[in-house]
Length: 436
Image 1 (cartoon, rainbow, N blue to C red):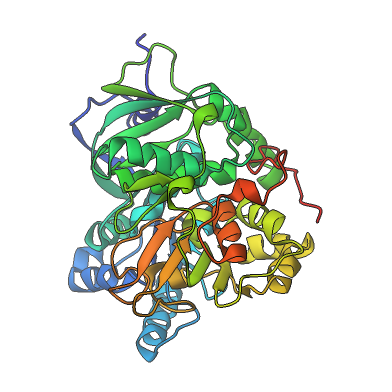
Image 2: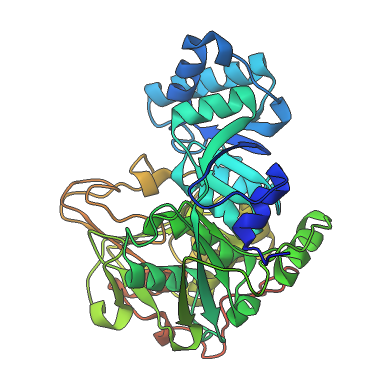
């Protein structure tokens, strides 16, 4: 029997055979979801096509009100009304205002699990690859077909092995790892590839950081960014959800179309400078750039680990005069955990504006748009021109630690200057709780 990649095992689990790269197959789905930014077109397709005006399984379809939530405009409020009405009529799950950002909530609720096939009407559905699921974004029309039929076509992607080797330095986070990779391969370096993250370094990469890495796989063009269901993942499911999930890993002799390697011990904090996500530089090269706003949150870095990293820097300090620091945990569950452990107090006392459960500033919807010529450091996933506000504004993407250090000084700052030398920011133990 041939050794298989993780991607091949996922397809075999659904089809009973191993399709070849490039083959077009139809796969049954475990979860389909859309949000208030993409729901409108999907439901329009369903309404206009009689064969699609149904939902295949209400328990496997989910809608999320997260992009503009609470609604900052009347138009947004009308979309939310339509989503609630559709959910009642079709019997599907609806996660309303305040529940959280879709890609975080599917993890909070264990809606994505090893071996699952998941599609969402949002490119960052790839976040689910952290859980050994084939999770990928699709257009609203494909989402409509998926919601109605429970199946969707896929062209089987070529598979690339990306070896993450060694132990990262304490101040390194998942954002530094994935930005470094994107800087290596470029924003188009993995177009329609299945990137499988492997190597000895996985034992140091927490589930929160794995979600960050998988989330930004799409920023290098990948169809999916997959981590195995190894001991780290299985311990997380057991502790957080009380679930025993299968071990699901590639075979040692599996063949890949390409292989890359990254030594984690050589990494340093980095940023993606405007206006492209692959314009990656060490923080030390851009230190001193003055900023107007810092945003900590989004589906990329709105998790518990991210805000604990920020709290390690913000505790006992204040956001610099003239700087706005917006902190938005990705879901109510994350917010409540941070609240119980005193992290929200630290953020508020430092002068941050704290909300939760919305994409908000990341997409330039609300709660922190940029004005003319303003500069932001953001923990989100894209720094395109005009993404967060005025077309002349500029966005630097960074880890939560770098963002918090920048908020304190008012200029881009290496977080190692403000962190204790032994403050490991990626904590694999799922029972870990921060004590201020």
